Length: 108
Image (cartoon, rainbow, N blue to C red; front, side):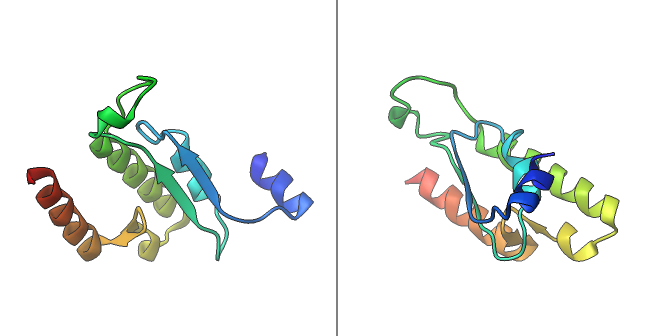
């Protein structure tokens, strides 16, 4: 419905959600993006000292699992193998490299 309305009105551009928690609202919206559109998810996850209103403790791992599941389900529905290999803006190799960097930062 929202995708149809945006197409009808000629609405396009970037999407950002601040406070994605576990990503269950971000994932379906991100899957509606069109070529050239960017989606950005923002959450302090483990840095709860920045969560000044104590609005909820999001989980980066839960967010990535939910996003990956949504992308894979959508790709399976479309039979799109290439999309299945790209999750969260990273292909599998880039995702592994990013996770290693994230773990190193957490250790510091």
